[in-house]
Length: 108
Length: 123
Image 1: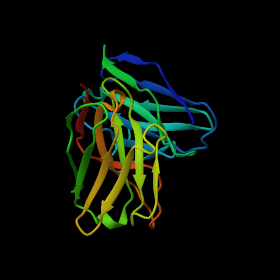
Image 2: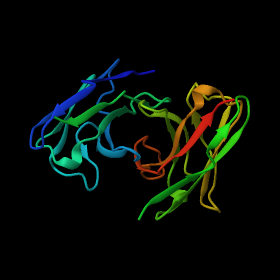
Image 3: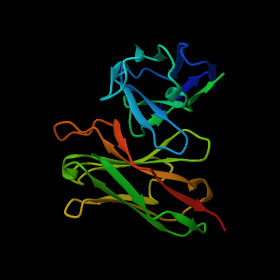
Image 4: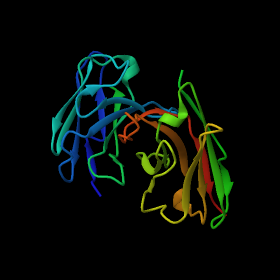
């Protein structure tokens, strides 16, 4: 089973600042890495798939990069609606699909 | 628009059974694989199971293999999760999610999720 480790656990930033989130896989997942956003009391929302492709309707301020074992989600300028928890997910080796433990982006 | 509505959650004693249902709308259900994913309080999502668009293939997480069964009824537009021999660590919000199926093949990306139904396993 591929383990995904996200860092940091919490990121404290102000609106307008740049957010950089990391996801590291225990073995190569090629570019089969997705990112999801989850707000309190809501279901996760697909943001990025195949490491860098934005899902339908996702603002351009969200971008993904990386391949192999190291991946980054960047939010270029935080909007107030972006404060949430972000999870990565791999689909290279399944079953099972696996998710990371999450990074919470909170208002500083 | 795409909607997924789960039901069937509740409080159940260890060792008992529960059946979750998911009713999708806004898309051609029979064209898409469907997943169940659960999330314990304060934790990341945990994938549970997937069923192919036509119901011919199913896959499970090791933690539920042999206890849970995913199924679907394309004539009624519903997907189910039968959960037997429930344990305390099955306590979670259970989400039904659509696979971003392409040309009939599941791709293991979850593009729409329901709001979830809470399952609490406790004596």
